[in-house]
Length: 435
Ligand SMILES: Nc1nc2c(ncn2[C@@H]2O[C@H](COP(=O)(O)OP(=O)(O)OP(=O)(O)O)[C@@H](O)[C@H]2O)c(=O)[nH]1
Ligand SMILES: [Mg+2]
Image (cartoon, rainbow, N blue to C red):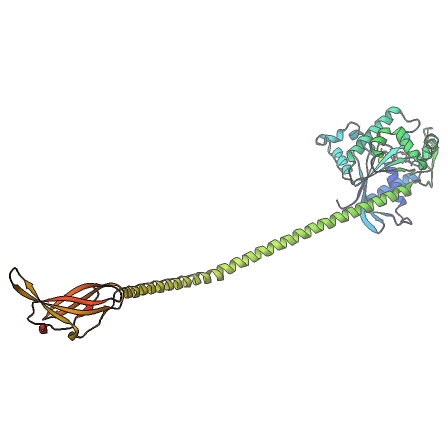
């Protein structure tokens, strides 16, 4: 709710309608303090003017019918604040009906009108509870006293919360001032507390004493006169040109309460604005991130991914090449290693004249039956240990012998070359190879 709302509550005849009109009229012209109530719309103006005219012409207005609420609107100005303000003039009958037997609690079974009453009242920021002094002072009937107090007590219990501002206004002070002064002492000098304790003990102890409820004494119509009606009966009616008493204090309290409410609403609005702003910024941030994510995704899909794929292919190819090279190099190295491992045969003497030849007799049981030529070839193994094949061809016949050499070893290799008349017949160079 962004408009301070005041509800005037009180039992029938407590003076709500009269006070509303008198207050509105009184503050339709700015006070020296700057409090101003400017009616908004024809409805409010007509309502106030109607009641005011009746009072000015010495007539009371009829009781507000049950089920009716007059929602009146003003532009309120006070202490540099300006705001719309609503005052709801409720019907006393409704208050009694709903709060005397706690019927307001059974909200589900309330009529639409009653529901509206309860909701309206409970949604109001400022409550002005009117108490007709006549209901509690002097000749007041005991049953009615108890009944009224019960209604008010129940009502106040139901509406009190930490924030709501509540005032209890005693009306028709003009009629009871002398009795009050006599019975309780001057209200201004603490008589009001004594009155409360004595006449409204449940309200006093239950609410007024411990809760912050403002108390006011008001005479909306401070001067009345007795008039004889056409039926011969007499009645007390507003005196032409009447004044009011106690309105300024009440108006000041209302003004401050409304200003407090406006400040609360402004603070709430500022907080809401901040929340909205924070939410908007949060939204913007989320959107920004979403966009950034989208852009990044698009960039990734359209640029990075294809480049990366190509790069990956290139890397794969490079890796394959490197691996191949590595493998080839490894094979090469292994080959080299194998080569270096293999004995690298070197003839010390490649010169046949260095060979040594020998004839050996292949002796039988009695005599030599064969001569065998043997060639001794000097070989030096420069390489690693391994077999070296020494072969050579003599008279078209190739012979060989595999001989094991240690690394760096040199020795004579003996090769049988067969039955040769003499070694001169041997021909060709020996060849060395690895088997
Ligand atoms: N002497 C005197 N009588 C008043 C004053 N205000 C109200 N009254 C009397 O109280 C009666 C009821 O006043 P209303 O303002 O109509 O009371 P209400 O609270 O609106 O009553 P409902 O509409 O029935 O709930 C009037 O008809 C007057 O007789 C006042 O300031 N002085
Ligand atoms: Mg009324």
